[in-house]
Amino acid sequence: QEGEYLKKYLGDKKTTAIGLPGPQGSGWAENYMAGFRDSTKTGNIKLVAELFGEPGVPQSLRIVEDALQTYPDLNVIWGGAAAAEAAVSAVADAGRDDVVIMSSYENQTMLKLVKESKVLGFAAEYPVMMGRISVDLAVRALEKKDYEKVLLVAPGIVTKDNIDKIDPTQIFAPDGWKPEFSVK
Image (cartoon, rainbow, N blue to C red; front, side, top):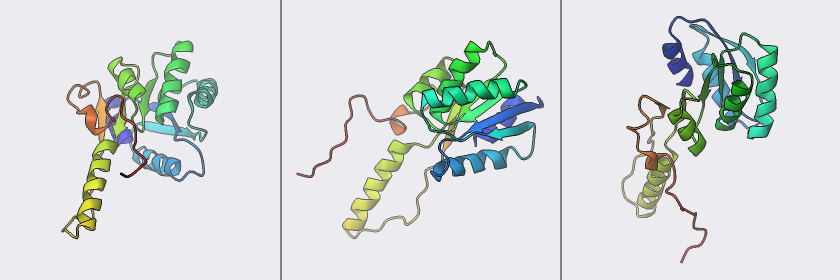
């Protein structure tokens, strides 16, 4: 979804992009990268590098800084939330206000950076909603009630245009929430 959104956002502007999906061998990073790669096969985004690495901000910062040097015409950075956060810093330090940053998933920092227009947007997978549905389905199965065998939560793209219209409680746990690991 992020690649399709970027193509629409950028219009006819030719762009050079890198992808920073996360750690190679994790499975999820490869899947995220495959989705972004597939969405950029057509259109105006030229994907010049797939840069796998640990999903921390300090680790991602080094990768983004190197990419800005290696690809001077780079103007789209796509990756996980830590990579996007690192990109905000690296792009600012490099004085590159022509670079668009997009995150492949959500966290509280991405919410803040989208509101500040430092990140174009992020994909929202609605994990709280998925968790609630999962618990409901598990209870229904245990109680031998009818339940949907396949139930999908459609992801979405959160941008400055719709950030005030989303329900963050479907994405983020409430403030102060802590998991309970015991059954009484």
